[in-house]
Length: 64
Image (tube, one colour):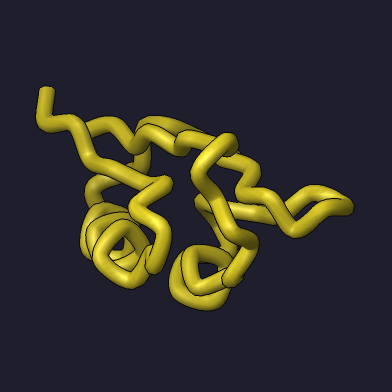
């Protein structure tokens, strides 16, 4: 599983950080920063939840 983040679509809601702060951060403009694009098995559920909670659709999951 891989996570993709389209920073040009991000609206800075921060839902991803609230759900999975070990996978996502925000820059000084509140735009998503992907800390890793390959979550561990233990992080996969949180990654999927963050993707589902993204109001702009900036995040996506790509299955390997």
